[in-house]
Amino acid sequence: MLTDRTTPPVIHDAVDFDFNLPAINNVQLTNGIPLHWLNAGVQDVVQIDWIFPAGIWYEHKASVAQATAGLLKSGTESRTAAAISEALEFYGAQLKVSAGSDYATLSLYALTRHLPALLPVVADILSGAHFPEKEVEIYKRNAVQKLLVSLRQCEFVANQKIDAYLYGEQHPYGRYSRREGIEALTREDLLSHFNAYYNLANVRMFMAGNVSEKEVKLLDNIFGSVTNVKASGNERKEFPLQSAQERIYRINNDPNGVQGAIRIGRLFPNRHHPDYTPMVVLNALFGGYFGSRLMSNIREDKGYTYGIYSSLAPELNGGSLTIHTEVGTGVLEAAVKEIYHEMEQLCANPVDDEELLLVKNYLLGGLLGDLDGPFSIMRRWRSLILNGFDATQFYNNVRIYKAITPAELQLLAQKYLQPTDFYELAVI
Image 1 (cartoon, rainbow, N blue to C red):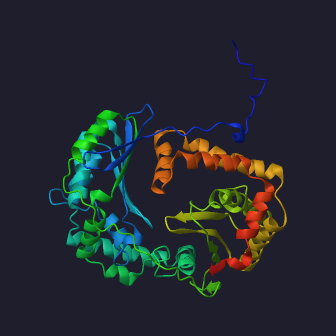
Image 2: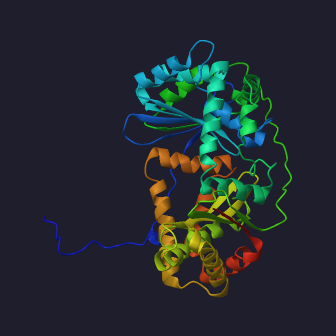
Image 3: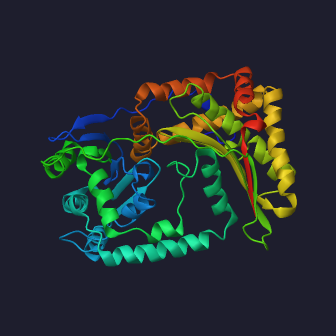
């Protein structure tokens, strides 16, 4: 039967779809290490994450969390950095390491059939990263040079400063790298952080791809057989907020600068607060996607910038809402004024149904994309699990996205988009 190409297909709104988050398997290895795994996809590929509470929150010395992550592959007692790199390249695999505010993550991307050869390499790194003195010195020199270059950029300085104003420079979420902090790092600092926080007793493992019980057993044979798994160094410290007293700042970082970075932000609760999910909708409407109010006004109408966004940054112990853009110095103050104007409009007037439907379709369409493919599904599950949620939270989010009303969004705007509650920073 021939397809009638004169009749366009029916277009369905994302709000009309039913959403189903595929279930994952939650098991423990022989020694108690939690493993969350998902068998999905048809390609012979796998992603495995090892996630440790080893981020900036746990630093005993400035810059040590990122330095430890950056040098984790620099060698062990039995493998040099070159040997580790060659092993990964030989099997076409990638091992990425990063440290954020709360967690440090190792992510292995590989063909499933190569796991028997690759997992011992990862196990060797996690059991005995060596941090050779020479590699530490090279890292420090490179990090300082990168920092000095970045400090010439107004947007880099603005990103540093706005978080410091919101949380305080001594708070882990407001702390930022300084030259003296990097230069003061020693090999012993990295070893201390590694030994305390990369202990396998602190890890959560996630695996997704074309995998089965065979790969689970392989992980258990290599990581579940470790007998000295004993929790250490994983007590979570408390840090008081030390938000800045002043709320408006102007920094002249480059006397010859022709562009300024604007950051306007406030503290906002994390995912556990009942206002968080509704705020995801309001944030999308305000500045969270290309069709937002901020983009329509300041980019499309005024032509002040190529892009302007607002974003929520939820952490384990807090969060923030920040508007960020870069504009020419001649229109900087005008752009700031328009940002506040859009806040006031959302507080004063309910959004119309057509605009809200567009935002709902955008958010729910993004969720549909998250449910396509094993790696994106696992990212969704990983976020839920690390924040202490189960699938109930996912379906609650879907329900709120579909059902939220203009009146509810206006009340939310009146609560969280008051200009006087924001810190305002412009860096030239």
